[in-house]
Length: 64
Picture (cartoon, rainbow, N blue to C red):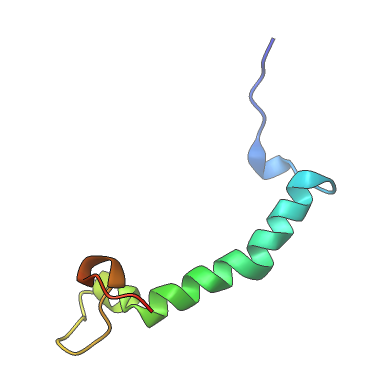
């Protein structure tokens, strides 16, 4: 029988998932933040994007 658990009362302390959490915390979150900042996504979300500001390369076809 499968039971739901309260995720707010659970903690991953070791093993594969703990290592995965640490990797995401150390590397992935910062990388995504930098990418959002470098491509103007934060300004776009705030509806502040103006002509001449960075544009998402996916839509322009430009690559680094």
